[in-house]
Length: 313
Image (tube, rainbow, N blue to C red; front, top):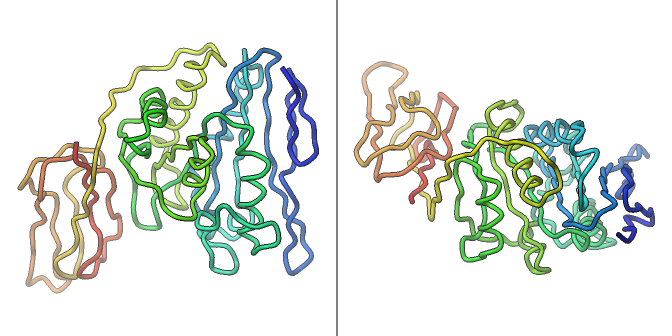
């Protein structure tokens, strides 16, 4: 195998090394760096990317990668290369914020610019130094401050290569998700580098079910490409071609009566919204058959708020 180079740092075949993607300076002259773990076998094989921390408050993916890079199987790959970036956005991670200090979302800054904003520079470095090296990637995310996402993998069903990777990873749910402008996933796809997005849990909280599903999915992927020899449990997979949101018809206190990830049928009672003053209670029913892929954990809701995300086969 030939050596690869990241930011001028060569990584030889059979070598494990942590390199710095780049150094970024804050107004206080504080230097912020992005560590990139590279694990290489001395045998030919694919190059995989596992990345997390695009948004600073999405910590489940960071924990998934932290646990993966500590495994002996990963540190001694049988073939190929693994690039692991636990925290792609250390500035937002420092502040436990979704956005960068200028208010921008890093995942809307791609493909970036060498002399652009802070987010644009990070995006540019990722696209220039990392994406050309990989064959496939998994980018780990969570729901928002109120939305808890059931463990799921998002890809474009019309892209056969992405869908095949999704089946191998075997998250409980596979959701058809079109590309969005400015995202890592879309810009990587333009270079024929499929990146799938794993969603699990909510921001600023550990969700151990999602963390475990993420780890098992990565191990399945590594095992499939013969990069590690490890036994992983089989997982039933459900493909969801589209999804809809059930929204609050009035303001009040939201009570949910079904677990996240559950299969529901049309007209099933999913919960209720109650007036805090006791006069009104409105039941929430399923508008169709489907799986709960995300739930709003916020007890106090306003009219029009997204409450339940239902995926449809």
